[in-house]
Amino acid sequence: MTIVFKVSDNVKQKMIEYYKDVRREKTPPYAIFQAMEADTIITLYESGKAMFQGISADIDANIWVDMEKKLNNRVIDINEPKKEKEKYLEELNYFYSISTVGSDEVGTGDYFGPIVVTASYVDKEKIELVKELGVKDSKKLTDEKIKKIAPVLIKEIPYVTFTLNNKEYNRYQSIGYNMNKIKAILHNKVLYSITHKDENYPYQKIIVDQFVYPKKYFEHILESTEKVTDITFTTKAESKCASVAAASIISRYIFLAKMDELSKDLGIEIPKGANDIVDQVGKEIVQKYGEAKLEEIAKLNFKNTEKIKEL
Ligand code: MN
Image (cartoon, rainbow, N blue to C red; front, top):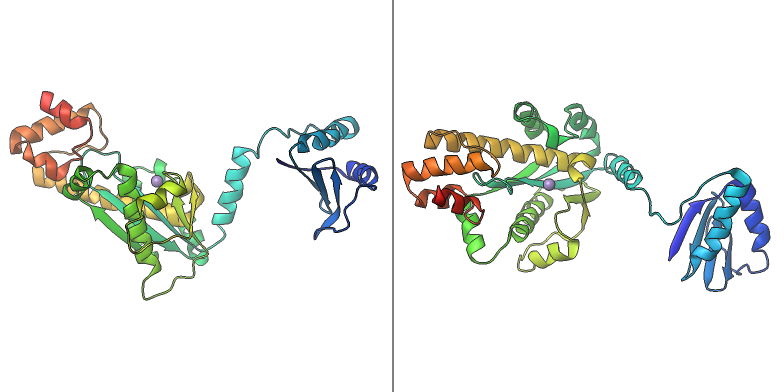
């Protein structure tokens, strides 16, 4: 195991003293010393960062945790990994400082309407603009806000989008592709497309909102001949990364337009989601256009299909 924490100056001095006889010959860059005691390697850095590595690293680490408590009344919790919030903020600050390609999808939880996946490229220089539009919490934006913001993004930000209609979705399902596989295939498709345009975007990272473990993601796209592999997967990516946020908003915008179109075509207001109202509307559609219509406009493997047929 590896334990890392920062020690105060007075504890630093104590550590230097304590390990002086078990110091290793080599000192890593920026380190004051590296020592070996029992099975544990102890490295103290100039910055005050102390690192303990080994099967029983906690034994040595605890000496200094206790010392911090005693000398400085500081409580260090070595059992807890880096705080979730801290890690989140670190990533956010980083992703909002570099040029990125990011992708996000919409429609996977909606019985009606297509799945829309978008990849966008947000250059460092455009991050401020994306921020000003208020895209950071894209999940919380109302449909009205989306309709206002998205046209600006579409004008300013390069993107590639793909819409999977439900006929195709249902065909994928019938050959055994589950939702995650479909998502992986679509993300890969738009990511490949945006990173292989005539224009080379100088992105530093490709960020994907993590919906499966990376290993699984790459299993899902095994048969895809054109693959993007240098991906950074992270959860809540749409709130940490401008290109994922932009992709999320553009996807939602296109999805909303498709839903409006569908409502117009059918002469019935088509609801989002997969709740009871969806079942009611589904029943109406079946009465008006017949059961076969669902195959075109709905995700048949959702439980809603059975419920609609029972109504
Ligand atoms: Mn997402």
